[in-house]
Length: 312
Image (cartoon, rainbow, N blue to C red):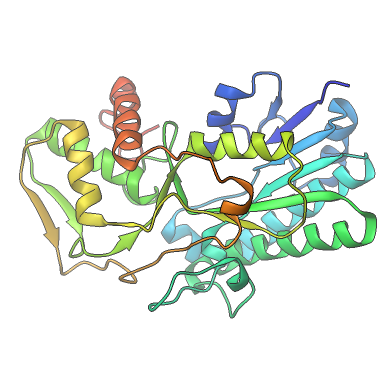
């Protein structure tokens, strides 16, 4: 029997990446169904009748909004996740994979965080609502496996980037915001100003790589409710990331690292104790190549970005 795949959150960064390689799937966004509403969620599953689900849907916000709307984000995301997994179980979905967030994890200055750290302490206060909703999603996945035998799983990628990212200068992800800032600096003949010393270390993974991993998981005998961290490398200093973006953007102006501005924890990285056991031969897109592809995509959309702080 041909599998019928449903992808929730099909309008986001990872959803767009999946659209490139999973043409037969049904992609839904918040414009199609309100997944905080259990009746609409059950209607979705009754209409599509999927056998497999990739659950990406989430109510997301930027750094500032996360801190100001912790309660709202906890409520909305808990509702979405509970409704989707409940409707999937009731409708007999055979396989389901949800995507957790690295912001749910405890962070250590002396070692990388691993899968076993997911429920240690509390997430960073600025991400508490969103981060804890992902922890609850992990728990619900495990309980459905234990009580009903549902073959549901989760993954935890480090920060994703790629085409269709959030380019907002204030609320976007680090890499997307830096690409937009570099574009504007080149366009206006100004220096590229970056917050912090540039010494902070972060990890990034190309969105298409995560899309490929999700499909491989559905097609393989990968089983178990335990999450798997997905990190492409040991991390990169922000100053080196900025230089990579500048090369891709062909920006030759001055780059200023403003040490008077905050840059967060100096090192924030994760590593997986499980990934190599399941995906020994997987080849991640090198960061330099992924940045080049993302910048090329961004420049092809620049008519939408010009004059807009937020981008597109």
